[in-house]
Length: 123
Image 1 (cartoon, rainbow, N blue to C red):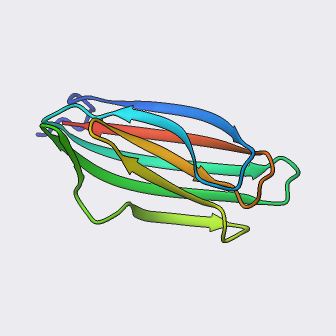
Image 2 (cartoon, rainbow, N blue to C red):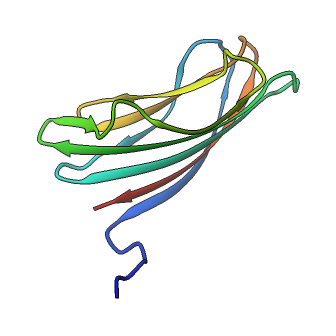
């Protein structure tokens, strides 16, 4: 019988960031070790401080690092769910040589608090 516990590695992380501009901003970076497969489950929750814009995004991505290159196992994130009050609100990721950076985009250039919950599994 297979053991369903997380024995191979991984981490959980919760972070917040307040962003005050309407362009993509980096909010968190995670290292990716060579020779490993990583699955990221990420939930972003956003609220403009005056309450006029809100959003929730759930994304899943599977990444592999071999030597000096990181690749995603699919063409993009899997978009599990998106709920937003403005089409301008968005999230994305940037792949570096040894890391992945999460970015967020406000609806407008007004202070917005972002909450991120990240579950990382690796083998």
